[in-house]
Amino acid sequence: MKVSEYHKKGLKNFVDQKPEGYEILGSAKEGVHRVEFYIRKNNGKISDAKFSSSKRCKKLMAVADLVAEKLKNQNVSSIKIDPQEILDFFKEEKEQDKMRNRLEIVLQAVKK
Image (cartoon, rainbow, N blue to C red; front, top):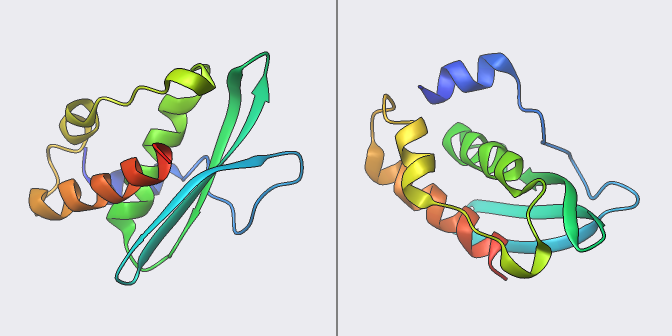
């Protein structure tokens, strides 16, 4: 899928700031790009995940939104995100080097 197509479907997990009742999972920043993830837990599992980010980069926002979806229902103590699965999802996107970079930023935030 292309990032533009993903954005047309709508970002399900983007928020401007930390929602009430959520805690910060982690954040990362590189240059002008920043991302922060928020989670709601239930019995050690992530019941919901949201993120906020700089709005300049549509690639970063799309990757973060998909990763937020993948976080849901995972154990907080053993979060697993398959980087190749995310890259494969966006394989139609040009500039794969930028996609890998944005994914690295997102993974830094999730693994903190």
